[in-house]
Length: 127
Image: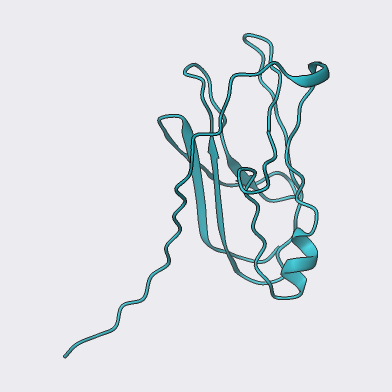
């Protein structure tokens, strides 16, 4: 008997757009998740890719200092959650974590690879 196995796949191939830079105005530029909740409530997928949007992301950090940045969003039904960050520095790194809004319960951490972090929650149950 032959079975049909289905799977998901994501792939991106493009030029290396990470460049050395000084943070503008001594500040940070994180992406916005505007539109996330509206898309999910309409049953649509939300995607963001700063390379495709030609948006340069950066943050400024003092040596030995930890930084934290959070996005709040709600999922009205179970979803597949995928996040990936890439960076061009050897020491330190960006750590992804997924937490519940009520009480900061940790759902999971991202997996670290050389110069990137990947976090997958499939399925991510509703809030």
